[in-house]
Length: 254
Image (cartoon, rainbow, N blue to C red):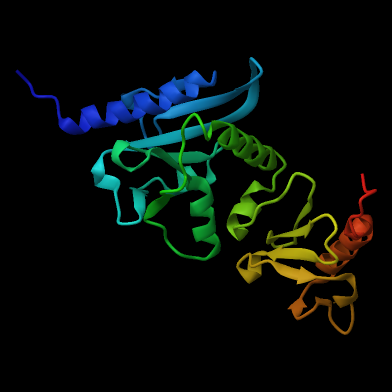
């Protein structure tokens, strides 16, 4: 009789573990048929208080010792780079390793976007040993994913990933594209006396800026960063419209 490969048993056990965990917390899990599996195993829709939400993502599941490293696990990207990085839904990689913490997860989309910003190819998604996915950590996982997906819908999730930063719920985030379609982001955290500029030409390195640093002549600049006229005027409008958010936070602040 035909022998069932051990890799299939390990793979099915991994998928079943992830599915059981998510469904135990009432989330909707749709398994992608093996014949249509092009790098994702599960489509997940988050549920809150019994109501289906607009928050959804894809999951690639791996099991067994084949993805282990000395410090954690790695999932090969293969030919999935563009799909995982630029698709309509973010992709997570989840590893099932009972001997090393059970289920562990990583945001493949975020890692691939960061690699793109650094202009470096990424062959594997790093899954940290601290990134545990279980019943005890589910609430934190759900909250993190909901907020990430909210930022995706706002159109700024990609820039946070490329800059490897986290936008807080009350941060002011203003994206902009110049005439040659180069993106940049103005970022203001509550109570900070400075703002942050994330810029395509600066490899998305966060640059602290203040209004006094902006000048229009002899050439538009903010600090040492050369701007075009439209970029300078956009930055000025950002500064003027967010001054109230740079005021020091006091006990009476709302």
